[in-house]
Image 1 (cartoon, rainbow, N blue to C red):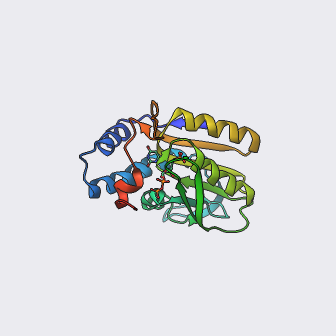
Image 2: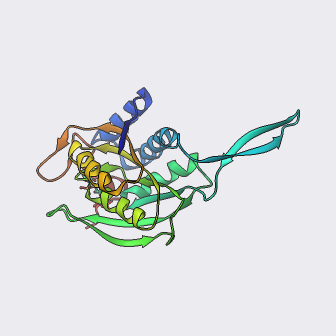
Image 3: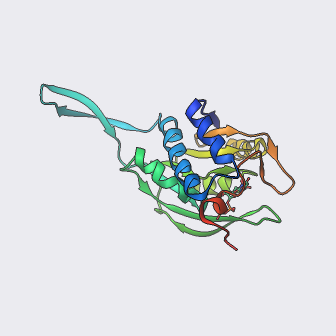
Length: 213
Ligand code: PRP
Ligand code: URA
């Protein structure tokens, strides 16, 4: 697995405002979208394209367009949904599949409660959206799900990641043997005893959408 930490002053600036606990919800939402668009620029470097011939007002020329099947973007509900518009702004022709996952806050084990994805993902490039890579249970489960359906190339876009979660994914992906990269705005210090990323940004789902319970 390849980990790519995006080094860009605008990414650092926006992430700092996002981390700040005083940042109000509407600003938090907008910053998540803006950050994802910046990260997606890096994350889609390897997106598959095919050659096309076009005519400009001046001459015939060869260019490229996104290959078929279209990339599949998979936000992990809830918090990943806050990243979807920012991703689609950059890749408007992508298709979207949904995975609903919740982490048990005591055991930190993920549970899948919803899915709406094509049955056959062979030949699809998949872009998984989840702002937080903490223990890695949720993202690992999502990647396993996509690989079981035939996905052969997976990129995850996260805002922050803990080293513990990155290690867990490295082990999982060494077994799966599917090309996978994780693009993040920051590799943070660690997890705390409650399984939260430090310094992190708190509970991403709650900050985007309010308390669920
Ligand atoms: C959060 C986050 C990730 C997961 C990360 O979701 O959005 O999906 O936790 O933790 P992990 O790496 O330890 O699995 P949460 O379960 O809080 O659900 P929510 O998005 O509905 O708030
Ligand atoms: N989920 C979150 O929303 N935040 C964390 O720091 C860890 C998991």
